[in-house]
Amino acid sequence: MASVTLNKLNKIFGSTHIIKDVDLQIGDGEFVVFVGPSGCGKSTLLRLIAGLESITDGELSIADGVVNDLPPRERGVGMVFQSYALYPHMTVYENMAFGLKLAKTARETIEQRVMATAQILQLEELLHRKPKELSGGQRQRVAMGRAMAREPRILLFDEPLSNLDASLRVQMRNEIARLHHRLGSTMVYVTHDQVEAMTLADKIVVLRAGRVEQVGSPQTLYQQPATKFVAGFIGSPTMNFMPAELVRSTADGCRVAAPGLGELSLPQDAGGRPNGSGLTLGVRPEHLRLAEAEGDNAFEIVNVEYLGNEVYVYLEPKAGETLLIHRSEAPSRWDIGQRVALVPELEHVHLFDEHDRALEVGAARRVA
Image (cartoon, rainbow, N blue to C red; front, side, top):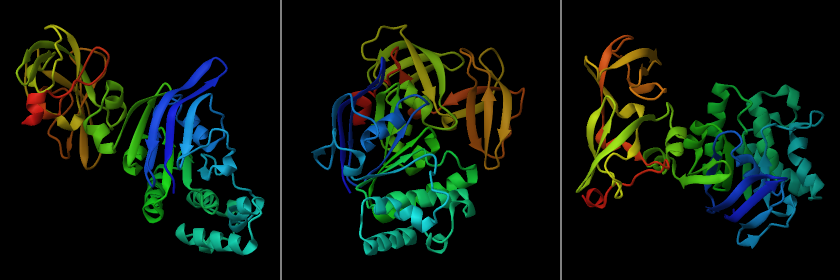
């Protein structure tokens, strides 16, 4: 196992600046997930750690040693790619042993490591088979085993489940989580799927346009997003956003007005902003309550989705173009065409400033 430290890391391809001054500490034995939209730089960042791309500027350390100029084989990392990249003419055993043979490892050591890895991944009965005789999940386990057999200090995963169907992704997520719990090794995992990030990570790194937007536990990112981008990216369905206006600051927070919601008293500190300042109000679907209503301030239900154990109710917004979403347990008494009032749970409301940064809860309310 080993820690990883990124200090002002940069990567430039030609005239394109991909990774921009990334500072990050990955602890020994942590499971860290890089997440973000396509093109945000998460796979490039992983390849910089692996040594598959050169670092333009900054410093990368593994276990307190700078590795900027070390080739991949000397960094002590194992990588599992999106493509299984198994050799079709080799058996499972031969695929898992291939990297060790290239390193001129003794035959007895190769057999010991491959058999130990196969036991961990439950591949003992498949060692004689070739890739064409395996399911997608089994092939992914073989690809993981090939990396693990080298006993790397760090395991890197580059969107390893994106080629699998939905049910198999759930199964493999559980297997990867169990593997980390069993080995306790340092793992860095790249995905665009925030559900994978939330279910696997000890720590999530949200990337946006080559920069780190926020780092924290899944609970922290969900409950205390630092920016509107993180609030909208983490969570499914996404957070509801509505335009709001600062009415006035108060002793323990502020009062804001939002279309259709009226005035709300919130614990966030307005930071000396003048009355009338524009803000964005955010609230997650499970923190919106509905009540029957009529009149101009009522919201119209435009769709209801039944998902078995829960229901999503979609409402026409008063301002903006994005539908608002209410989530509740099934069954639901709401139907298309009904008009309702929205009642947000005030302790779960988020406020974002003109730069999309979250306003912090005021000191008086924090102490309380």
